[in-house]
Amino acid sequence: MQVRFQILRQNRNEAPRPQTYTLEVDRSDTILTCLDRIKWEMDGSLGYRKNCRNTICGSCSMRINGRSTLACKENVGSELDRLPIDAEPTITIAPMGNMPVIKDLVVDMASFWDNLEAVEPYVSSRSRAIPEREFLQTPEEREKLDRAGNCILCGACYSECNAREVNPDFVGPHALAKAQRMVADSRDGGTEERLEQYNQGTSGVWGCTRCYYCNSVCPMEVAPMDRISQVKGEILARNDRSVSRPIRHRKVLVDLVKSGGWIDERQFGVQVVANYFRDIEGLLSLAPLGLRMLTRGKFPLGFEASEGASEVRSLIDAVRELELGMGKQENREV
Image (cartoon, rainbow, N blue to C red; front, top):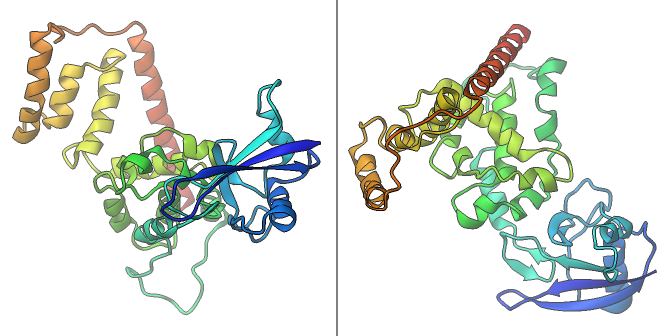
């Protein structure tokens, strides 16, 4: 069957331009195989990365039909099945996002690697004496590292990260997935220092917008969003709401939903931004919004709990009891 491959091509600091190639292919051919044929048979100037061809190295990440994935993993048939039934058999290929293009499908991943290094993704033994033997782990301890350990650093999650796109300080889902692995590693001696680091501003876990897109594009099912949530859970368990605004935001939100089924926004602003009237600067920052709401008749004078508030309350209590039981079980295993 004949398939059109529309490839977005460009050189550094130049505007991208689409270029189309038509190939006779089988549905089982991988996108990487098709790119190889284009380069070898039609246009030797086409630039892209590859290595293992076997979904291990992560080198051939690119955007295929609008999403970041591995060219060696996806095949022609599955990509065509994503198109509308009456659409022409066309597969679009573009470089990954959130990174500048060097040439064609090759991007500069310097920020990707720098942000990974920022979370210190290696086991720390600074706080303990290093014995003349290996650090041993039980199978249960090792099992906690499986999901994050599957990451091949392909960059797909980083490419599609909405938080990274609007916040250049955010280290990215790949880095925080590796960070969670370090927090969960029984051999690591720097857990408290790590959690303090990952709790800082919007560069760490609180910079995540929870869009879940990193989970959907990850080719290894690492689920970076879930790993970030686990780090948040560790931070929340160790700190009260007075420590920082992100922690207050999470805890106050849950408490208000538990109380009324939905959020009383009057209390939410005062408790989170103004820190229960302790943060004068934060309180003053709310004043312009409050005045605009009052003058336009949009400031609620009362609060009415939602229907089913008691059911919401029981669900939250059930989740907390479940988490408490899981924590006790983990402590017994250790």
